[in-house]
Image 1: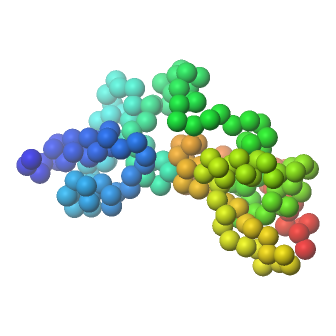
Image 2 (image 1 turned 180 degrees about the vertical axis):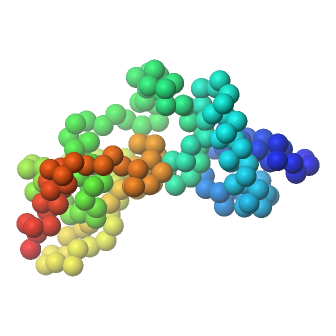
Image 3 (image 1 turned 90 degrees about the vertical axis):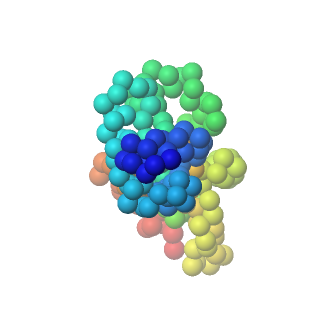
Length: 185
């Protein structure tokens, strides 16, 4: 296939269609044989054209890479039917535990429990099994408790590109999530 901007865009879009998980620009360059600059140009053109087209999906940056996903307004209409596809819905307790970890990471189980006010053992095991969190080392305190942090799966699950895309917390919530710092000795 001749390398033209249109053909490069078609090639990149085909790879995004075939991949079920987010892929980064270097992967796209490797698979397509395009230069990284050509991949970037193709992605920009693809984003522009698909946002103008009356299609139900678009390329988005999520989980550290690019993926074809439903447009936000379309997803709002379909999420009740499709959100459980590929992953389980999270209970209120799981969401609460996951939020604490996301906003306070790296954090220990005891620190999560201090903020939540209840045991977090089962929720942490559940979130680990779903690969939404991971062990991120040991805290340099007596007993060397395990630290937990979110994963790329977490980013993909919530359609975030990075942790910077998390909703901003209000001042009172920020203080709540910082509580573990004062209590851990």
